[in-house]
Length: 304
Image: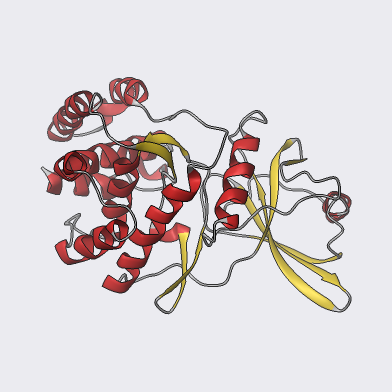
């Protein structure tokens, strides 16, 4: 359950007074997610009940919080379907609750897609390119926490948990990461984690993109590669070429890829798979992983 921080109803009511959005009606933990504490919060004002999401971030520093507030506000102004953080009466969007960085967001309509179709892939690709364009207006920045140095140190730390063949696979991808590190490719602020469970749809219409807490400065093609890996793979880790084509076609309807990006896409898919193998290995041991690293090991094996 993604509700690591608990609090009393009275403490929450005092916190919500800063927004003056109404009286607290109910609050319930959101089970999905593995990193932050999230709650559905219902507030009533003038007999109207409005739904919100309270996010208490469990890993960010207070110094990092303004970047995310500015990014989400900028994207919302640009028409990207993201939850813009609500502002307090004195204009603050980054707040503190339970001693941690906290945001109050409007709840977006829709549900995570369970079976992905080509139209949804096209839409998410288009939305990702629009996101990249809109994020260029953000003045604050954040360095990539999953860079080559991190990957190298984490492979050294954790690869012994894996079978010999998979250890060699990770070392091979790490070497490829070193090779593509010096490519001169378009960079900018990326989402970094645009999986299916971070998108909302009503039928085949995209209604929301959420969970931006991995956003940072990176190669734009890396963001596309991470998205392709999740949206276009099957249970065996095989990439569906038609879904991949639809997603990239959607992306390129907004921002055409350079020839260098096209050539490097598969390499960045492998590097993206490596990142999630490692973060999932870091989340626990044995059967105690918060998410199974085997999912991305399968993708990495299929990518060769």
